[in-house]
Amino acid sequence: MVDLMQVLEGATYAAFIAGAIFAVIELRSMKSDRKTELILRINEYFSSKDFEETMFKVREIDTKDPRQIEEKVGRVAIFALVDYLDGISALAQFKLLDVKFLCYQFTWTGTWNRLEPYIKHMRQYSLRYWGSGFEWMAAEDLKWINRMGMEIMG
Image 1 (spheres, rainbow, N blue to C red):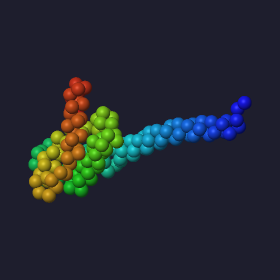
Image 2 (cartoon, rainbow, N blue to C red):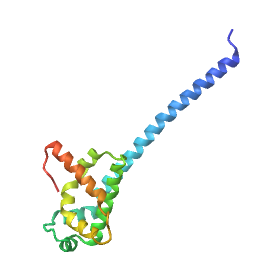
Image 3 (cartoon, helix red, strand yellow):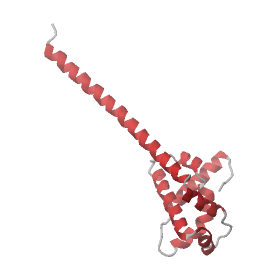
Image 4 (tube, helix red, strand yellow):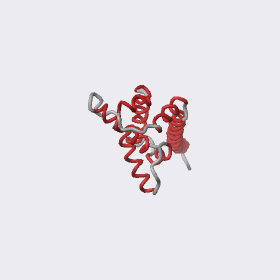
């Protein structure tokens, strides 16, 4: 005969295991939901009026002179853009965002090529590592562009 205590003990173990499995499934779901939310927030900013206005000015840069770049785009706009792109790049460097996905989302290399003279100029003074994440992401984007056989856009 089966002892009632053994049945209850077995049921408890089974419930514990089922609860652990459920918790793992929920954690994975939460991780996916958070990542999706982050991506949506990034895309929301990419399509914001401030971002688009700055990008229009950046796309019109036709000089390598840092002073002219600052005059055309504006110091605050450049800093806001570079700092934002640095933050997104850091997420990719720490594998919190997929590099390939980010390459699809933004013209990293083209934007870097236009802002590089200004960023390098600012690094000479007091901002030694400013834009380094953005520079890293532009290099990753260039690798991706070369693998895909595409042209640099931006």
